Image 1 (cartoon, rainbow, N blue to C red):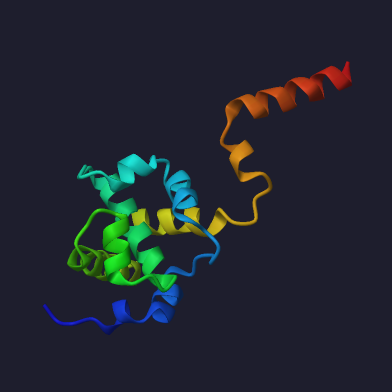
Image 2: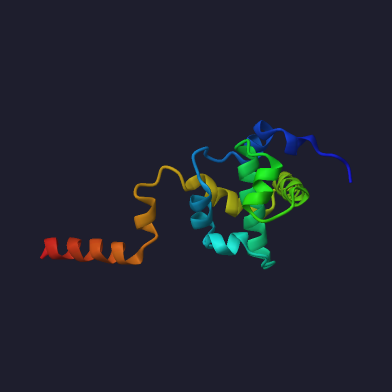
Length: 135
């Protein structure tokens, strides 16, 4: 396998991902729709594994070291290298599934009350209040 210098340069990874800077691991898990326990688990379901790779690549783009990311996600640093390479390759090929995930990641910032948008009860309460005021 040929060495890919992109994974050693967080600036280039930021260009590939084009994602916001101020997300933490909890936000990333929420965006993916999985819990932190799922992200850190050994589960190999395809969608979860791809989200895990996106999260690892995002963390690398934020200048975390490979060892720190590996310790955080319970993986070996060589797995993190593979994740970064895989996401970069899929991004270059304009993979539709990956592009949807990256769009979800890019659009997550700037939404008002992000947590309240995920709770159906809050939406129901707002709708009930709106209906009450109309009557």
